[in-house]
Image (tube, rainbow, N blue to C red; front, side, top):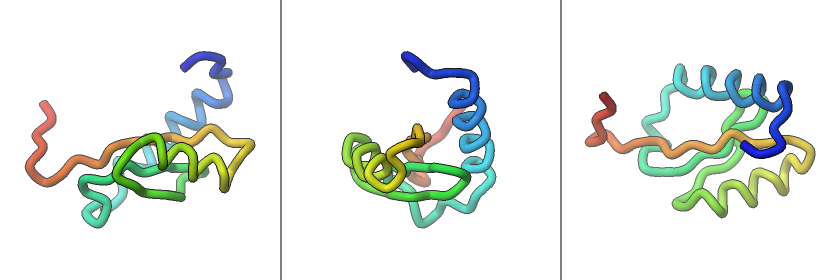
Length: 75
C-alpha cells in the first residue's frame, strides 16, 4: 500500500465492497483484477492479473483478489 493516496484507498474500498456482493461462482479459484467496479481480468496467479489489468488501465490502481473455491471457509 505504499504511495496510496486517499482517492486510491477509497477506490480500492469501493471495488472491494462491490466485489463481495457479486456472484463469483465462475471465478472460484482464480485471481481477479477489478477497476471501476468491473472485473477486468482473471488468471491463475496475481502477477499476471496485475500486469494485464494495468495494461488495460495504466492510470488506475487495480483491486486484485483471489476468489476462494467452494471448499474454503473464512471465519
